[in-house]
Image (cartoon, rainbow, N blue to C red; front, side, top):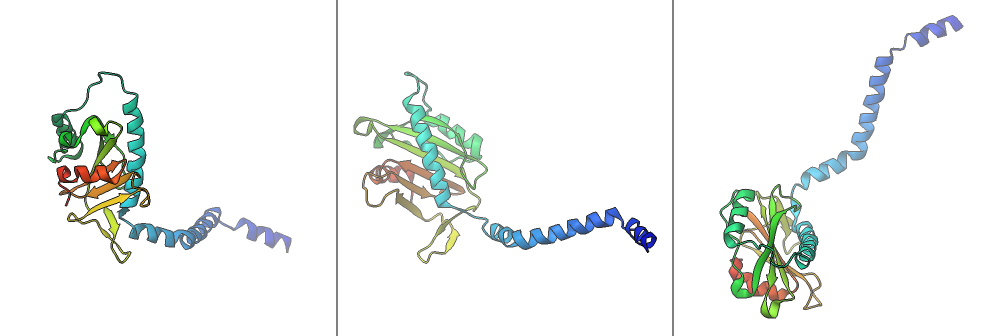
Length: 208
């Protein structure tokens, strides 16, 4: 009896046992994570709220950098900004001139926004009565990755005929605010310290 048991024990194929355990493990993983994978696959769009949150954080960092930049530091011209858009986004869209609205560009460079493989940021500094204000403009390549919610709470691709203006705190007129619109195949996000500044530059932006 003991000899037969020993023979049975030696007859177990280690490779077969390993494969069996792997298959069982995979079945468990699919059972646990399958719904989450399907949920992630169906959520291919990036919500504009995620983009706005990222833009807010980047804008704050750029403002700090601008405050501490050396006196006489070189600032980008409109030609520099247009060249940056062409080289980064392969697009001929020209960032607007906000001089008449009281803002001049002081910083520009690549930025990392959710949902886009290529984006950039431009920081404008206020002058005159706007000397304590900043405006951050973000431009991202958009191939239909971004989505917003309609009046029924349904998520849908962000339309190139829409403009969203949203204050951080609707109860505070001095609250920071975000404007989002879509010219051609780009997504443009603008951050300012209040809604009034957004309304001031909306026409120059060409936002619908």
